[in-house]
Image 1 (cartoon, rainbow, N blue to C red):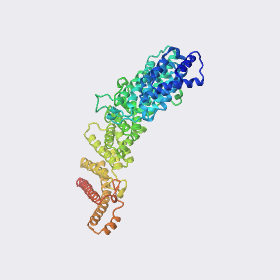
Image 2 (image 1 turned 180 degrees about the horizontal axis):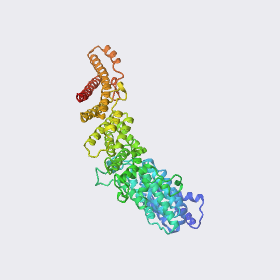
Image 3 (image 1 turned 120 degrees about the horizontal axis):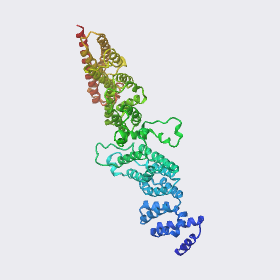
Image 4 (image 1 turned 30 degrees about the vertical axis):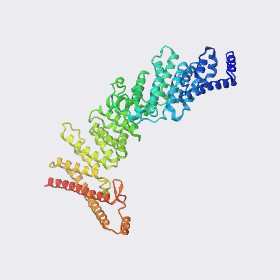
Length: 591
């Protein structure tokens, strides 16, 4: 259409109130042409003209997609298109332009999510600030769309990745904080004397709390590396985002104890303002981590809660974090467990806590990490936390805990840790002025009967159970040395336990040494045979069933098989020497 014809159409539009579909089509075509040809100045002047305000209000919203595309493309009229977009959100009908902008968020190019969100947040914020009654639901819709896209961005794993911010997640998180500030401020400055204002502020608070704070805590912050111990001087974007989220909770007067420790009564969740108490435990777990490990907002957390109560409440979150096969979750769970335990006095946790479900599940999760996790530093850290938990239990709780783990772990390494702790407790009881009686006398004997045994009898795989067997023998030797010369029922029972155990162990040792010796001899004879045909035939007859630390010897190279079998024989000799020493102690005491 010629310029003079377009001017005539514009003059006509200025005199009418209702526009036909063909008017909309003509307006959009003209606007798209200006954008495509780089005539942004011309379009901007048209929109700013007061005489065209009602034209723009009725039909300008349709230009938003093209303007956003031009800004993202950073074309020659990108600056003017940004200015036009800012004008449109102030002129067009708020509901229409908000829906259009949110559609642009939903349709964002997967390869340009961060750029799209950063461009769209300011105009969306401007539209929402123009709203009154619909502001709260509009904010909820906007935050839902924005976070749905942000959740698609990969979370940086290291501080270096966070600084590089290749996918733009950190930029988006920073932009979200800027986006919600006016609404947080409105909640903070609410007029409590106005019922309508108070309700609107309450709804804004609910949506900010739900869509921003709790959702962001769950994703991306639970996946993020938030530990600043190695670098406390540099402010990392995601750590700063976490700190700001916690600050927002304080500003909108959300009680941190209520979030972490309060469980709503069933049936009350239907109340709109009670819904904020019903958020996923993942979000609460992240708050607990930020509060007690990173100490963010700890200055506003009441100091009236006892360390035992805090531990009891945090155990649910710790168990949740440890149950995920994700390094960042496990690390946060381990750190939270340590910080929750550190404030508790040694040997003070009562036995009643062990009957609570989380106090049963968390140690099992730690054991699972120690045994199955492929990441070495997580296995080592889990053992440290496991030991710290044991140290905080009182005597009765330790006694019960040791029995439980011995019966349920089914792992020689874990069982050896328990046996080592039993020895330490006996030693501490002997040296301590205060004696609770749980690791001496009949209670100790009862515990030993359950722990010093060979569950598989004479079929016990001594290599697989080496850790437990060696620790059992060391414990027996220590106890016999400490108790010898004391003619009591405890000494008699202890000797009976030792004799029963060593007698069965000797049978196992005899069978194992004979078996390993025979296999080692066969292996070395096979190595001497040079004929190729006989080598192939002997390979088929090689060891197929011997299990050593979950590996079959038949799958190992001959050199490795030789080393394993030699190690097995040396281990048997070491066990046998301890058995002999135990028998000598018993014989000496009977003279």
